[in-house]
Each structure stands twice: as C-alpha cells, then as structure tokens.
Image (tube, rainbow, N blue to C red; front, side):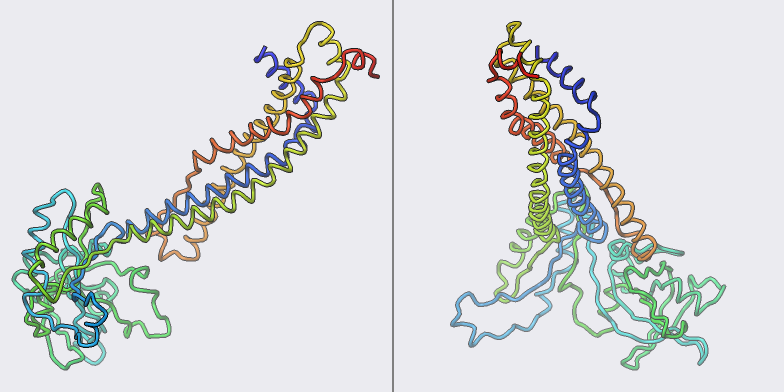
Length: 440
C-alpha cells in the first residue's frame, strides 16, 4: 500500500508538471539557499585551514618571556629582567626536544635581523639588500623555492660560516648572465662595517611573501632579502649568545598540533623550572583557526536559518495546492471510501503525496545549491588568479558541500511535507462518503 501511494503521488505530480514546479518553488529556493550558504561556509573553512597550514599554520611558535608578578602589589617595584646567556633557548635544547618527540617535530625555523645595507662593485653595479640570519629550516618554513645552488645547512650555522643565499632578481641585476654561485660579495652595513660573504644559493623572489614590487623605485634600487646563517648573524652583531629568544618549531603534518604545543610547553617548563626570571611561552595558529571556524559556523547557521524561512512560504504553497487537489479529486475520494478504503488510508495517501512533492523540491534545491557553490568557487578562483596572481600559489581553494547540510535539508523537506500536508489530508479523510459522491 505504501509503495502504491508513492507511485500514485509521483503520477499526480507528473500529470500536473507546471503546477507541481510552481508549488515546489518555495521549497527549491529555500533548500538551494541553505545548501549554497553552507557550501560557501564549509569551503571558506577548508580553504583557510589548508592555506594557513601551507603558510606556517602547522608550527608551534615559542618565545622566551619574563615571569610577570602574580600579585598586583609587586608591579610597583617590578622591572623587566635583563637576559643572560643562560636564559636563551639553546640549540642543544632544540635538538633534545626533536629527539624526544621525533614524530612531532621536523626542526626549528628562527631568524634574526642584521640590518639594511648595500652590495657594491662600483658606482653603477650595486644591489640594496636586507640581511637576515636564519636556521637551515627557515627557507622551507617560508615556502621559498631554491632557484640554483643549495640552502643554508646546520653545518653552516654550527661553524658560523660567512655564506649567503640571495634572490634571483638581485643575482640577475648584479651579476647579469654570469653564474653567481661561489662568488664572493662584500656587504656594507648601515653601521659602516664591511662583511664578506660567499654565495651558495639563489632563491626565487616571491611577491606574496616580500610584498609587491614598488614600481616607483628604479629596478636597480629595489631591495631584496639576503639570508645568512643565524649564528653568523649573532657573531657579526657582537652578541654573546648562540641561543634563541623566539623561534618556530615545525610540526610534522601527521602530528596533532595541540598535542605538540602541550609537549613543547611541558618540555620547557621542566628546562626553566629553576629560572626565576624567564620562561618559554608557546602559541599555535590552530587556536585562532578554531575561533575563526566558530564565527563562520555561527554566521552560516544564522543565515541558513533566515533562508529556511522560505520553506514556510513553500510549505504554505504545498498546503494550498493539496487543498486544490483534494477538491478536484473529491469524487475519487468518495468512490474509494465507498469501496472500503479506510479514513487512515485516505489520510496517508495525501500526506505521502505532500512529502513526495517536498522531497522532489528539496532534491532539486540541493542540486542547485551545490551547483551554485561550485560556480562561486570557480569565480573566486578566477578573481584570485587574475587580480591577486602573486598570492594564487599560496591560496589552496577547496569547494566542499556540507554532507550534513544535505541530509538535514532532505529531512526538513520531508518534515515540511508532513506538517503542511497533514491538514489537507485530514480534511480529505473526514469527508462523508455520500457528500463526496454527490460532489460535482
């Protein structure tokens, strides 16, 4: 009987195609709006997560900070303590941490700014550079690609070598068509000192990381970043240190970022347990992503709730057309009841017809909503590639319809059919047989 009712409902819908489509319009609009909104929200979350992970979201940031007074009264006499050599995070500590948790950490990315200066051969051949001391993993952390030569190594840092890697734009400007690998350059810092370096590598300049090229500045005067070993940087700065005050621990892609953060915190709490002035504070971007995702979810739910209001309008349309359908089929109802059909059977027939009508509308709405999501995703990708091309390689677009939203949409479509179809169906079931048979 149930299957017969479904077949009869489908036959009734297709026998009045235009009327059925107009009836389903409110359902289609409501469901398609919900699916479009949830697809956009879900896609934004996925895109943000993937992009931030590719740009360092899978790192634990740590820095040495002072132990601040716990009591308000102590703030009046408290002064920020001066850091000593023993207060820095040493390379040995980092190595011990990585060795202790080999499945969580891939290395450390740290940097120190040496200064701005110039590499000059003569008055016509020069290059402006910004010198930064880094660890061997820093180039990978920055997602820079090597153009030629090699990256800085741990051995370069350990032995404090005067080696460097420069931008391909700087190499082309300064050396022309010559191969600069192995060439020695002299850096003149803003402090007036001269430092000799040997070029061991060339990286591809990326405007997304270093900023767009300032076209108002002549090409030969544009500054690029030159990377040197961080321990060499400390040596040239005259700092009596070999440790770090802040750094980024690169977390393995398969590891849990929150667990890694907890392990780092516990490790350095133990190391700094006897240090009365300083401790190591940790932070990861995943916590911010959690807040962003929460905000996006709240907005998505709120806007989807507004879009679902159109389901009420659609439901009223379904109720209206079911009342019309019952009026048209009054004699049919009378004949069926005269032949022994129960009132519950008549009621079920029209409730199922209303449900099938709403489910059809919901399915069409879902298809339109998913299609809208993909179209908007492609449009966003087109805009990024054409208007923000320098960032396109770092933005990982991902359009993902929400499976839970699709399932809920079908459920609400069915619920709408039950709620707005029951009154007309109940009205049909309560008809008197003689009145129905006499209806013209």
